[in-house]
Image (tube, rainbow over all chains, first blue to last red; front, side, top):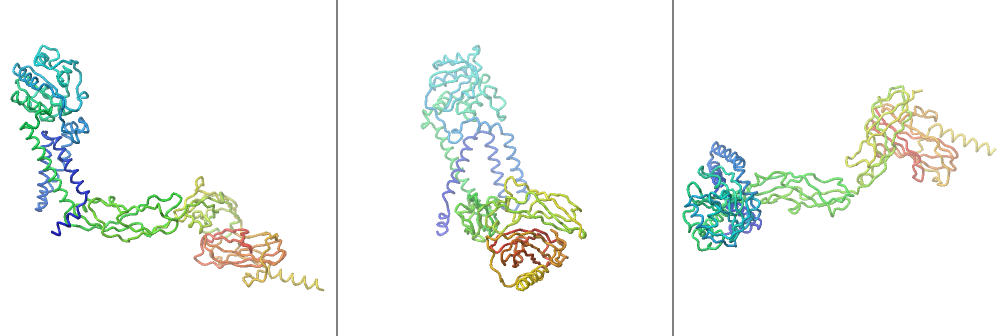
Length: 478
Length: 144
């Protein structure tokens, strides 16, 4: 009982959102891809993954490696081989349909007339394509055609698809009780898993239904069959009543009474439930496994520093964080996902102490901060100022015994240096890099040398040359 | 007679000063420099040696093997006895602060430091009056 209470107390609202969101994504994948080869292959891959987990659990090393390899390669193959299907689902449909679309057309059409006409055309073996749009527009997918704008009647449909009619090869578009367009050209489905006996007319019907929420009644010229394309499915329709029922379902007229609709609702509900259970199980397997401890040495990042101040010194550059979480989460955590950010907005010049707590540590979800070493970081800040400092040559080496360095003139004699105020207070000269005396010759000459800025936080002011020129004069010893 | 005694006293004092006998680090016997006085630093240099009050081998780079470095200063326009200081600074860290006495009307004086192995690097000597004003900064290096 206590463990159950502990479990619920450790269950965060983010976890509920996490499970819910991923369950819905999985469910939508089912809704969008059901009936296609992609879905079947995905199911196969999922089973392979389970098989691999079982192999790992049982210690079958080679089997688990092989299955893991197959899964990895298969995932790549899916993207390549089924790119058309995936593109059709993810790009051709609008955003709303992808996220939550169960489209139901509100404006009813005379379904009996359409059903009777379709079967009459089938009896006469006259091919036909009748498009009944859903909520989405179909204009972007349909090309050509002739505006018609005639009331629907059986005679009208029979005459449109009469073989001698110039527009009989195209599709007829129905909007409400009117035929708005005839002879329209539909996009062809790119799927390669369609039976070979289906011709261009069926491929066109499926092409439009895949790309939109329209349904397309297609009458086969060769076999005298009536089929209905909806989504990615193309189903033969056996009778007028069945077709009428399907059309009514599309229009939302007889949805509640239809056993088929009830069956579909049950199927959708089952899919939703399976998605929820699957994701919940998956979530528990990765987030509630055996607790593991791990340590990360994390560099400290500073933000909101006053631009007039600079960080002179910090007591530590990295902090060791001891984290706990499930073994799976710990294994998948990369060091760059663990960050420490200190807000310097309220820091003042001088030493500032910051405790390292959960509020300034960012961790991947599911990991818990157990301990911090050291618990505090002392950051020393200083105001940035500019100071003019004289330059001095740092001679090294040795002059020839008979020479003396009589005179040195450097240009510029003074340089502007930018750095921390407290640092610059203790600096009164900028030295050059080491200049060897043995480079000097008797008489006079000149050379160049760079400047050495110590500590490295010092910078030369804008416009200051990093090189100085040195003019010298030597003379002989008397 | 009084004039002769006064002349002899001044002459002896001058000789002592020019002979470089003192690093003048004894207790102050003179008043601080009057800011209105026109003290003029006539000459300032760093040398390897000073013989008979005259700097020898003035240079801006000295070998550590020389063992000693001298800072020589000559002042004019001294209205009364006053103090000056030679601040010896090695890489921005003060190394020695030597107090020297100047006597009217013209005086030369010097200070020196003993060189050690760790003294290689850039040096400077700040010549500072009694009021803390830097009259001149001499820069040199101690090398191999």
